[in-house]
Length: 369
Image (cartoon, rainbow, N blue to C red; front, side, top):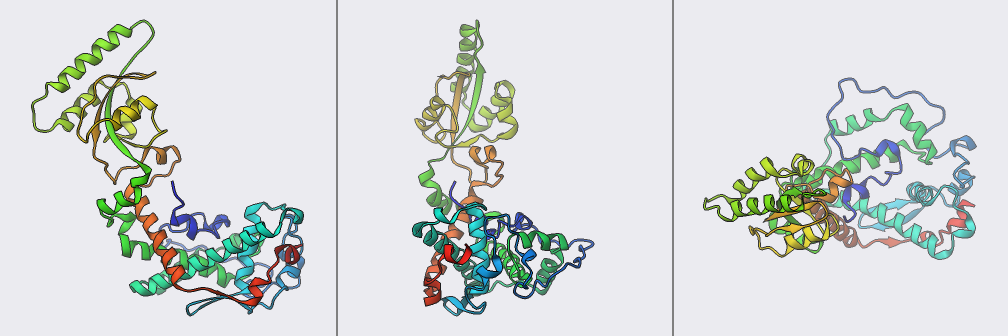
């Protein structure tokens, strides 16, 4: 599966407290209190080395942060600007994601520029969310902002310290923009992508070559080869002789009554939505050879004999591979997120980002080691 926009918008995402970003914004019954902590988090880091943990392979954060003045403009995109004060956090998080103990002798110029470019892409994606929200008239309500602030606890602050996030204003911005992205997505594509048409979903997923099918499985066990085949042939004959007007419903009736694939019936009662590699090769090839609505003959696999009925793709089903990854998102929702990612990429490109001379001077080894 391609990278989805939820991953992009949670890339502060390195922060465990953001693991659920894009989730419900329902107001808690009793908002957790913000605990008192040492240090000032709405300002730049004080001269206290404990603010910056030294066990990530990035020992002196105060010195690194002092490489440029905090308000130095690094990137200009449309009427948005990105200062060193903001960019520094993303750079530090990027280095942490690459490996906390990354040694400077492994940080060559190519790796360094890749990391810096990746961070620039992240920042511009956030700005693209803001830009898209303006275009579509989407904004956070005062209640949304208040709830986001109430969600921040003293425990969160301690976690943020470990990732070098010195500014609670920046943290609030990350959370607010993540929620703004959710609202923008729903405005454009509907809740969970429900507004995306089948035609658009097909265009976005065609290259993934999804198939959908129901099947009846007759298990083949040692010593009963002939019995299993005879049972499967009898089932096939009943299906071939059906003369009603709803073959799929009839197939489903026999499938629930006779198929040995009980696990599949429980998880995929409407049929499997799958790709190459999700099923044994004979099952995939047998399905692909059918027209939509078609019925196969007996297809033998290591499991037994399958009778397959190919279905049109239902974009509101969850693909088999997503179940395996515990990723419970429908194909329509996934396609809508792909489309939204393209929207953000186009908006980010349209902002015509310009990089300052100071940005071009960033040297990760010199700054962090």
